[in-house]
Image (tube, rainbow, N blue to C red):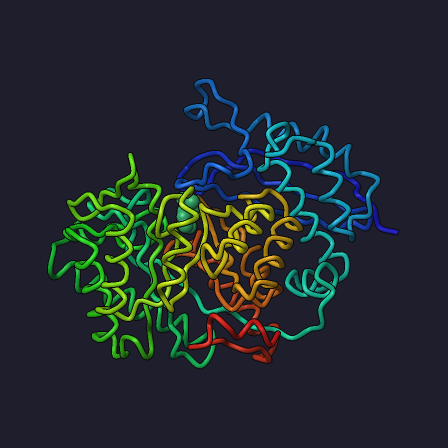
Length: 432
Ligand code: PGA
Ligand code: ZN
């Protein structure tokens, strides 16, 4: 039986130049799994704890303690566990930490082992990672759905230095026949958007934000951003609302204070903000809204979900935490779940959150963080879970593009024998 041989972590940098962990899991047969951990900027208050060293090194953001925790106590906790049994590995890591929010050893430390073990186990079994998760962890038959990307082409909020309150303006290539055409469409619309905005606002518009989307220089309002997206889709030769639809991540906690939401130079009540979203839906082909209200506003999420027919994704509200997802599902506070493995700190707990959401007929959107690395785990996770949706930034900058490239590679590994949800991005997962 294969065993853990060694686990070794080091401190590396993420896409914002902040420290994070790279962990290597060595198995007794010589196979190695590598994982690099992402990091958010607009983090939810209920996320598992990302352990940082404090002090002056890297402005307090060093992860040397987390590295030591991986190499010492966490390795000790799993060394006699079967590395092919990811549930058992995660359970041992969670038990060793024993805190509710993984604050003792750090969710970043724990997750790095969880991910790298899955990668090593897949290597050992000589199968691609998505197949390992699908057949060995989920124990589901092989039938694959490659997701529609929700691609963030204009960055605002905490991810860019501009006047846009809304954090992410996304395009969804639902009219594509498959992932290859979808990515081509993303790239074409993205470049058209850039050219249009440079022509209108000047060279500063070329700059990009944390997720590779344009920084929105010159854009003064939410409406300006929507107009530019619709124009870019048309100018690239596609039909807005048919070939490409729109999404946003408001990440509304970022512009919420004292009961009011500051957006486009106004202060709106929750009710007024709800009307604002409904108006956007009427004016533009907006089909997906994430975190429309503050991260504690379960009732407002529920009210909006009741009123609208479009996708209402919970992210900061639910932080991929099974218990909180259960609460949101019960309250009907949303109708889709954003899944970020580092919010909860282990792969199998994230899968549990996904199962709870799916059981309530909520689709899943597997997501990157604004601070990323070249790690492509989430592309495989999305295919393994057949979520039908992935959010991994603009088709630019290698921290984002690597995930798109992995989806193209997965398509190739499958010889094209996989579905693409297209317009059915919210429901196709039910058949997989
Ligand atoms: P974050 O942003 O990684 O900075 O939290 C992504 C998101 O809010 O979805
Ligand atoms: Zn979000």
